[in-house]
Length: 208
Image (cartoon, rainbow, N blue to C red; front, top):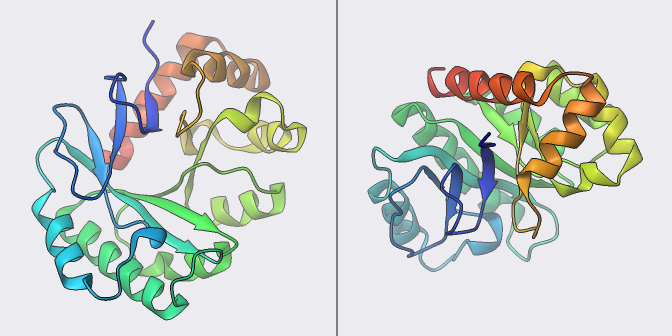
């Protein structure tokens, strides 16, 4: 059985969504494209926006990574401006948003009302309370390697509805099947059921 990898940075994975880096060539597989908070160039914002819009092809599944990050040395107001621009682009192009968020979850939640497309928090590994607030606001959660060992995150997965969940490898070096096996145990369902639900979730956000 093949297992869909919702967010990855590896050229050798064909069944998933590849995160396209700035000025990188478009792959033949599904990909996402966005302006990460750390990559914002305050002297070249217009060029970055042009690059983003010109790389939204038929194989582009989502806009992202994009979002807010309290640890990068980019002015928060500029981060918000670029994030809003990508939300608007997501609305216009009818593409979901893959969100990178560091210590800015409630700010990201406040922008949700501006989005008409699905918003997915990638690499989620925070406390259950944050997860509950995101889920109440109709976010999806994509989780990665931390689920294999983080007991708190495992408890969060147990309460996360299956129809709001995605699984990813991100930059970590492990096989996505390990994650599917762990989550299927946590949710008390078969690997087949979990895999089918992930694909159903993909269809939902694609057609949202």
